[in-house]
Image 1: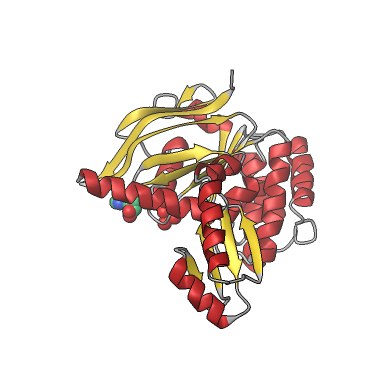
Image 2 (image 1 turned 30 degrees about the horizontal axis):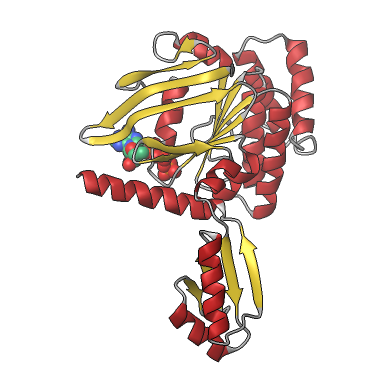
Length: 313
Ligand SMILES: Nc1ncnc2c1ncn2[C@@H]1O[C@H](COP(=O)(O)OP(=O)(O)OP(=O)(O)O)[C@@H](O)[C@H]1O
């Protein structure tokens, strides 16, 4: 049986008439990286705020490490740590001072705090900047000190709310490898992100949230397999052949690259398609099979959900 550290059942939350969470259900396995993936305003931060006991749901339950986020919030707080949009790093203190202060706030032993501070500064590549005020840090360094601080009390679960939003590609990759390292050390990571690539790279399990519900969940691979078939990409070196092919086959046309992308479907449909081209003496310059990307899956799932909602309206 799976060992869930977070269990969410039928969570609902509305602000006035605006339903933000509409019966959310999911489980997060202990020691895993879980990504809640959704567009702006999908309800990711609201979910994190409920799970981290900052706000209450209207109905439903959420437990972390067996404790109810509403009725046993003090126990929940002892097991979690929150970083991201509302983390409290003191800009005027140095990185090291911030870590030491967090240790004092958590009433940790001084010696232990000193040791953990040095370890965390090292782990997050901040040793050189340890004695500089946080206000002088770059965006990536701020995120890193923020996470380091949140790890000082050795939480079981860490919430990373959009940890790489606004970071340049290099800092983003660095952050990804640090997050992977944390998971290797046994911390459960609950990540929210709008970036498909981020979920694809990091998450053991991805839940897609749309209109306040989990509309799909699984590993990145499972989600990609869900929309099934590989895409067939036909590229044409000859412009006239390309124009002719557009008229004969239905697919996604990329004029600039002179390429048509087709969802392959059955072997039979693929055979028919290639026969049609052959009969018209059209020869593509290259034929490639491409597995759908998580982008394809996301577009597919969210557009399907929007259609369902309008059909039910
Ligand atoms: N305190 C509040 N009062 C009223 N509406 C709110 C409040 N907090 C959030 N909302 C609304 O709830 C919806 C979901 O917000 P939430 O912040 O959870 O989304 P999100 O998925 O985290 O998006 P983002 O990526 O933009 O942070 C939004 O439409 C937002 O405007």
